[in-house]
Length: 90
Image 1 (spheres, rainbow, N blue to C red):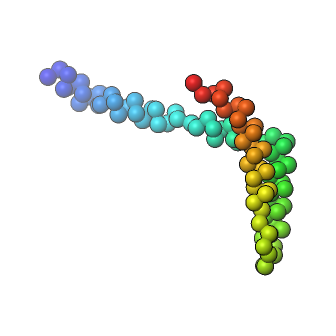
Image 2: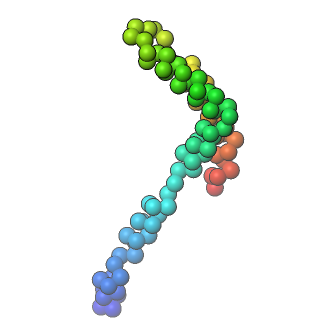
Image 3: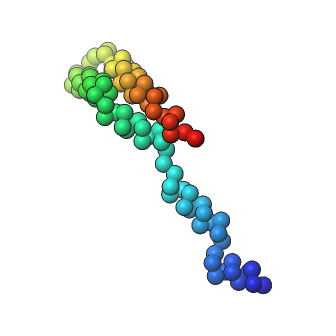
């Protein structure tokens, strides 16, 4: 009976723990990717990608796409991330 009263007054402790865990969860990969995108090499690759997208978007008929520029940007970002991500993983 005492246990049931505590459950009614205090609520289910499992529910509180789950809510706290969900709020604290931050994906370290996303954080590191954002930091890496601010490095000089990634900024340069992103500028090339954006220039290509602007050029392609301004033309009505073109076969050009920005695949190479996109891959260059992703490669630069992932190269930076690869050196940092495993230091944050337990």
